[in-house]
Image 1 (cartoon, rainbow, N blue to C red):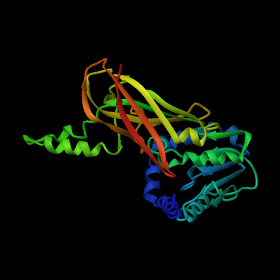
Image 2: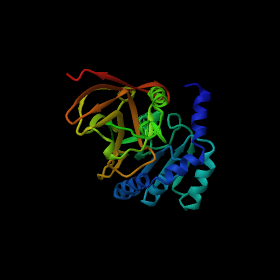
Image 3: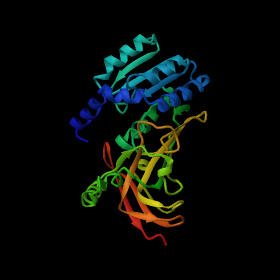
Image 4: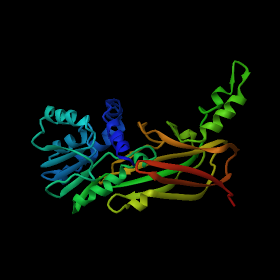
Length: 308
């Protein structure tokens, strides 16, 4: 990524509309609060690093849970004065030290006992912040905690009635010619939508899982799955639904599943080339790939396979 692109990426996170969305995501905030406070025995008098601290909520959670020192690392220049003010307003400026810069280039004077970050993007890997966590492991002790500790991506067949079927006919006017073109164009990019579990037409399959203590850059750069889904009800298969879970040490799970509470991440859908009408028990073969294209961008592809 060119330097100006890197700068634009971090400047974009100075937009408080983004942070408003994050701070209004109850499932997200509750999961991190529980993960931190239910592990407070492991945080008491410990050194913590918060990667991508944003407005500072996780850093302050850690300070409130008894951390001796929290390094709040943030690369967006616009957020630094806001972050410092939030730290001051919460009376933890003697514990939380704000550090401006990318974690890949910052240095601290000591190893850290706990690494915490809310690094996940759409389909988990969007914007590649997982690489910053891999890089930040250089600060850890041998027995340090990483919050969250594990991340898993899941996939399943799904319908997507909001795509075209809801406007194929309006006031008895047949608009199928328009919706066919729309669907063809829509198939060129992934869709971020909130689905419910009734939209799934197969059982979920695990696409990949990452142990945050061990995952490498190579592990996250190229992930391909060849599989056969089996439909578990009748319907129209429009695409592949992708979501993720992250797990913390105390069993707390933050899930973006259609079976869980809604989050701002929603789910990511890759459309099939053409919708498929199915009944129960129909095998559908597919190859799904999520591969890194450049520093902050992943490409996603779906290839239909013979199910035999």
